[in-house]
Every structure is written in structure tokens, then in C-alpha cells.
Image 1: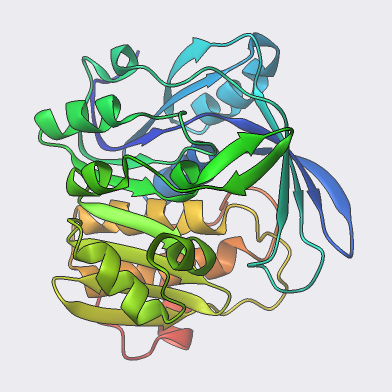
Image 2 (image 1 turned 45 degrees about the vertical axis):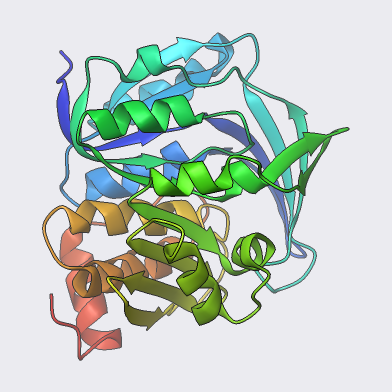
Length: 298
């Protein structure tokens, strides 16, 4: 039933999310793997999910499989459950609270699988370790990782940023780093996004994908590419970065960084107009790009 070679592997734990904004409170299925995998599949790529969650949350696995996404699941006593509070209209400002945490991803879950690329999207430090990253590299899989799951540490129910002892070694083993503006400043001490991206790239990764409230900045092989987000109604901020890096890495298996950055900006813009994962089609993204990114070279 399941394949063992894919375009993309999405690795990280499912999260059961409560999202609070000035306009509403809603419960949704979250986790980087959920947002990224749905977007990648809808765009026409073969994708698999490696995750851990409680058996009572099997429903999210069923949803992924119904969407044509293979799932490799190890069950955990608990799922990771989070409260994401956005107190203002600025999507980069949020407070995160954790009520329970799933067990970490193990190297055994990766063994036996092959892909062109992997997108690692942990929520909390310790969820996906350096051993998993190194195994992926040994398999000649191109590896991207989201910095949110490495700078964030669970302390007394809250997620806070703390220095990351394995940062240098981890970045040396990554091909692509995904970060947002807040995480980038914490990691580098640079408030200027261009300087922050360059500082991270100098530590090893050839490509940096940096999201911020207005768009996405990509640094690849010493060149910057920037695209704005175009969203009429900012409802689905949660999952922004996951959708962006998932779609970016998918298109990087077929095209150059400039083109992949445009696709990622367009898909992420469309996703943020509603809660939940991206649910549009490739045929809808093309006219969106033609309208909003007329100089794009796809």
C-alpha cells in the first residue's frame, strides 16, 4: 500500500492546536507536517509524513491518508497540544502554551525510506534530533529544517527561546534553513533580515528561507530573492511557515530558488486566507502568480 521513495518526507509531530485571535477562538489540527504535507500533495508531488501522536488522534492520520499522503506513525502516550495566542493583527507576535508533548521522532522511523528532500518541522527542541538529520544526509536526502523547533524550549507550560548548544553542528548538516524574522534575530542578533539570513548561511546551509509579516525572503548561493504575500483576509496565520517551506522544497526538486520562492509565496498567500492546510489546486495558483507576480520566471 505504501511507497518507500518520495519527492518529500515531512518529519515532525502532529499538534492539537487552540488558536486565539482578536476575532475568534478555534480548535484545529496543526503541526508542520500537517500543513506542509497537504500543500505538497495538492501541488502534485509525492509526499509522506513521519510523525508521533496519541492513538486517540488517529483521525488526523486518516485525513492525511484520504488525501493520498502516506503516513508512518509511531504512537505516543500523548499528542502535543498547544495554545497559540495572537493578541494583535501582527502575525509575527504570538504567545505559545503547551499542555502535553508527544514522544520524539526516532531514527527507526526514517530507516527504509528514501526521498529527494526532507522537511523537518518540529514544534519543540528535542522533537527531532541531530541523529535523524545525519541519517537523512547519509541517504543523500536534501534536508530542510524549521528553526522554530530548535530555539523553542518547554518551560513550565510555556514555550520560550533559549540558546541552542547544537546550533553550529546542526546547521552544518542542513541544506536549507527555514526561519521567521523573530527566530532569525534571536539566533543571529541581527534585526536586519538580510544580515540575519547571511549570518545563518555562513554557518553552513546554502539556502535560507525567511518568512515575515509581509512576505518571504530567500537567500540561495549568495543571491537574495524576495516576494510579498498577497492576502485579502489574514485568517490562517498558523501554518504560514510550514506551508511556505513545504511548497518551496517541493518546487526546489524541479526548479531554481527564484522560481521556487515565487511558488512558495503564492501558495502561502492563498493558504493564509483560511484556517487549516492549503486546499487549493495547482491550476488556481498559476493565475494567482500571473496576477501578483507578473515578472516571475517559472
